[in-house]
Image 1 (cartoon, rainbow, N blue to C red):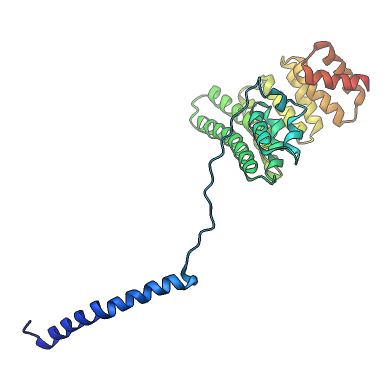
Image 2 (cartoon, helix red, strand yellow):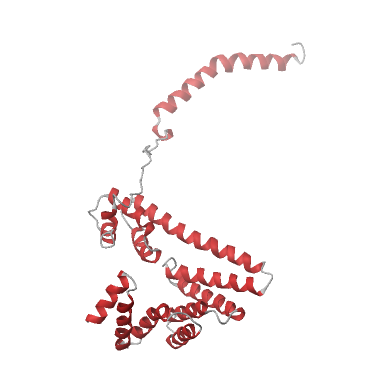
Length: 276
């Protein structure tokens, strides 16, 4: 406390003045400003809501709500309850993916946030599953040590890229890209096993989707020549004839389907053509 005397005295004076006197005054001013001036207030407009619970319906108890003739109308109807739409949407996991993709895409513009998010998640899940298979097949291709492994990896890649297109999981330019990739890997697989009828069938499907009808017909014919049953190829040949406006040939092939009893959907289609 003795030296430097002046500086020490100023320090003690400042502590005595600013902390007990002006310090209390500044604290009161700060509290008053924070309370009375709304500009500095933070108001949160968010509310807490309970997490919704969705139960997947059992096939026996909820079968009426997801029948083929109803699930599309239930999901598209504006007056249908959200709960029913949710149950229907969860139930169509058992529906063939290529038939559900367009419905899921349509729900992405639904007015319900829950429906949009659920439909988006289901679409992304289907895409992720196929993309995971593509990545695995590409790794297998890179590590393949012999022709048989190269053949299997290329065939698997062609199947997966074609499945992306077939299920309707890609659109616009990506649809063209997936077909190009599928054809590329199918051609690579044929270099190692040109007698595989399934590869020829796949190549024909790709050419049919690319509107290359001549090469599609040649591929389908080659698939039959390689030993693939005619009934496996006939649906694509019927589609080929339809696109070529050869309706007589379509009707003849549909008559064959009726004799073979190839399932309810095919029978309905065959009955339409035979009776028309």
